[in-house]
Amino acid sequence: MKLTVLALAAAHLPLLVVACQDHVRYARDLHARQASSAAPSGSTVVSSAA
Image: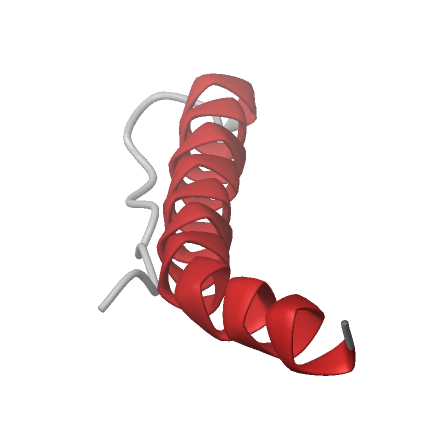
């Protein structure tokens, strides 16, 4: 029983990693958009997204 749980967890790990990366990327984009819309025109917003 424990082996099955471990096997399932190992199989789903890549999916969780990809989902976390997508979420982080989305959150970064959202914050960058909010910062650029809140910044006064003429100022440059430097995005730190790699």
